[in-house]
Image (cartoon, rainbow, N blue to C red; front, side, top):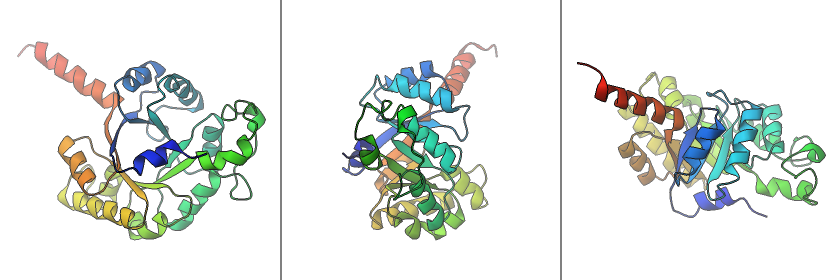
Length: 254
């Protein structure tokens, strides 16, 4: 068995995605029906807990062409274990600064002896409550891990991070990287853009797929040109906020 997401981001055709931060299954279904390539269910900066994430996974099961990534709030193996057990197959872990942290994240996604994932398949949606008879021996191959590098320290160790066996892709986080570079709130500062382009190229040189987020189309396409194969280009809450503001502006009295 193989992981579809890793195959898709490695086939040379860029995949464009959307952040889902509302915590709403209803909103998730609206976004999934748009035809977007992939979505990211976020627990780090959004009000998603285990139950709202489960609800959205169940909704997204009705949209099988949409790939789903889930970001836990940290690399804590307990969070990762819970997400895997409810059926998450593609994990993106934030704030990875060196190869040791990347290797620990890999271990959290693998059953022993390759890792430290706890065995609870009889209770898990992932195994369909042990209805998938060979789940324990095939699960590792179906899971993908993307590590998120978003600091100057992480960039300094980028090659070592990408070389960790079990890391399938590396995602650059512009907002935190900008802050780490002394450019808080300026993810499109020329120095940040240049650093990200170099990082994307380095990730590819180390044989891994590269991702990033960019809400401005020109920046997103610039990153694709630098080698990004998966890019987050919008967010449900941002679309709602900007759309509501634009609508209000049309009718507000001068």
